[in-house]
Length: 164
Image (cartoon, rainbow, N blue to C red):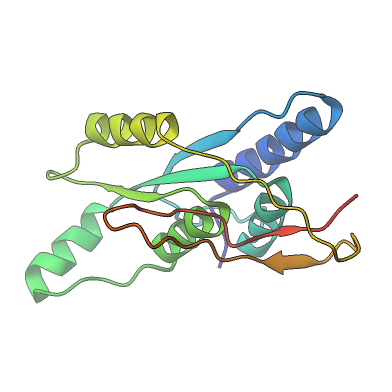
């Protein structure tokens, strides 16, 4: 599976630059990216795995907004079932593994409402610090954050790279 040439390469380069800027700065600032794309493969310059690897290394929350293709919508209406899209799956995974959220533009969820939801999400986040007693060996470490508080949504990235 590939991400679209423009979106994939653009996201790859943006993540690299943001991670580099954060590494050079003494300030610990939250960073987030919003990607608006149909996620479709056009001319495949980057594989999805390449983009996902850089996204996980950068540690930047990525919010993905997918535009549904009219062909998918027509198929779903004609068959009464949901069309599986690899590009939609990729966009969902990118958001999930980086601690962002996946959104899909529709009549029920217009783009203005989606951006307002992302703004609200970013305004109401808390960061939790963690320090491991294991050596920083460059490996990817999965994490799980949970709560016992009812009606509280926990959203976190899938893990982090242990770098010194």
